[in-house]
Image (cartoon, rainbow, N blue to C red; front, side):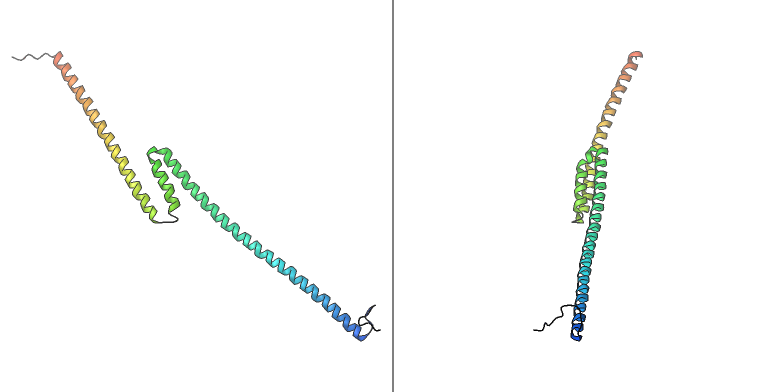
Length: 159
């Protein structure tokens, strides 16, 4: 019984062809393994690119958060300066968040600011009027006291 493959080495012509085919198969397997490794490296590169893109998006989100925090801090400082502006600051913070969704909110904030300004101006005018009235009353009282004092010290005799 003759074996179809060589048991030791490549001696015959057909055995040499078989050895060449075996070596070629091994080389082909190595090339395939290298291709698989290259594909894995490429997939890893794609994953790395996706991670990098996600990092950039996260950075943009963080920058937007910092800008939003700066706007919020400015609103808080404004509230410390003027207690009457607390309501306006809340509306402004809400407008900052809402203007991303709706541009019309900016117009609403301006209208609200004008309304609040007019209300504050109205109260300031009322306070000024009250102070003016009080000053006028005090000055009139002082004038009457002064006239009364002068008439007592200079007795005027009427015939």
